[in-house]
Length: 178
Image 1 (cartoon, helix red, strand yellow):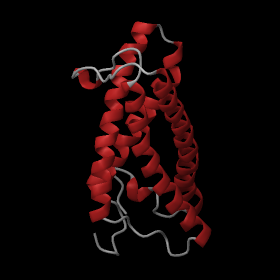
Image 2 (cartoon, helix red, strand yellow):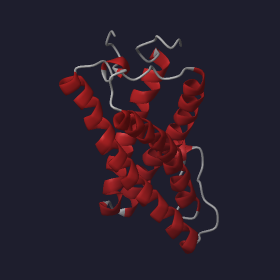
Image 3 (cartoon, one colour):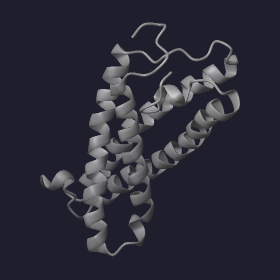
């Protein structure tokens, strides 16, 4: 991708929106898990953990793609503080989107019940309440951090589109022309 490119590649857009969808579904599932009866919770965890493993794989692909296909430049008239904030939020999203499935996998390994991503077999080592608690807490805190980052990322994209009327959001939309 040249420095003059204004839009993300189709691959970058696809990875962005698939990961966004998976993360939204997982945040909703994760938020409601505690209220479910045990068997329904386990069944939901199969979906949740499968999506989590998928996010880890897709984020790895996204990072590799991004390293070889840099993001389009931000508008030249963007204030420096917004450039710094944008980069900080994007880097943080990458970091915490990688960490979330790692914490979740650790939590599953030490849980008192088997979790089977994709139905391929249970993720479980010997139950360990202390390690389960540590991974569970890290997974929950990480989810809150992701929600906070999304609470910055989404309004910022909308600000660019509706107030600044620049191409920042449009360049990531699947069918938009920049």
